[in-house]
Image (cartoon, rainbow, N blue to C red; front, side, top):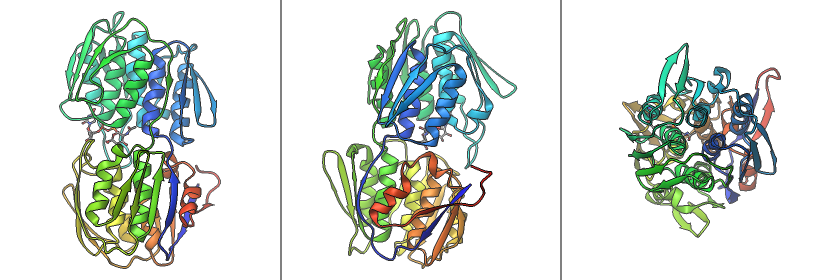
Length: 425
Ligand code: UD1
């Protein structure tokens, strides 16, 4: 087990950071490779723990995974063990993505229910209802979902009652191999869905409505292996831009798609940061600026992302006055608040809203990262906390930030990884 030691930076951070591929986009594309028989290649893949977990899931199914230098090759020719076990699915919910492709291509599979996550219960009912609407027979027994269909899925229409990234991914993948046409209404709009649609089309899928809330999928008999690319990680980009705001410095993120972080950039503008952007970069400059508190609501894309909620909260702790963040996507995603309070933060939770009284001096302490984005919030707060902050459970952070310490170092921050227990991850 490792921890981070982060001393106060005492100076504005300044520098450029190249953003890696989006792990959430790769996870969907990796699962989609199961829809075809053969070798698929995915580029711009970050070296992250989640990629390894999904590789392990695919290996259990019988795939061969290889690759280096941010290219992943998935050979599905040996895929014949149609099961995703609890040991893997419980560590990463996106493992559940294999459900749709497996039932669509093989007519049966058995996938463990993911269970809760670090901040509370996260249901998969919409994944199951959507697959049922396409004609899959679903039973849940002994903690496993068993999905079957006679021959190919018939296909059908499903209206997602709320916007769900994961359910859209699962149902969309299954629809590509259905006998008939499927219509997915109120599908999620997140850029990771467009990335998946592009990959599925490259495999031969017939999908209309990319980038809209209605995806119409004309099922085909078979897909061919495809070459997929990976969009830049919009949450990693937003997280590094928070380093500029919280230290009143300047950070430019490169190799990004600025439209994907438009709401994040708007929030920095509202705070009073100078924001500039080009075709594949964005910069937040808070040097010499007196930042203002803001009120933000997290929403499905194109709204402010829930995954930025914790990093934003840490940032707002540095701004005198009262800010609020209402998380409408995950009402209870606030485990990090108690940890931030250990550093001296003045934050109260009322329902799904955090009320942040910023500007109070923070003191370094021992804290833990309660989930991936919460860990980033701890690092941000540590940058401005007096003395030294020790952050444990950084295996959460390792799921989503590639080359983290090196990237922080290019901005002028010291984040040191030290081993505290050799027997644990
Ligand atoms: C994905 C992201 C995660 C992000 C989230 C919201 C991946 C691997 N993870 O998670 O980082 O925080 O989108 O942007 O891409 N819901 C149901 N029933 C379901 C499914 C979801 O009620 O069957 C609810 C959830 O509890 C939540 C909302 O729908 O309130 C949105 O969740 P969803 O978009 O599905 O999140 P994930 O795909 O799990």
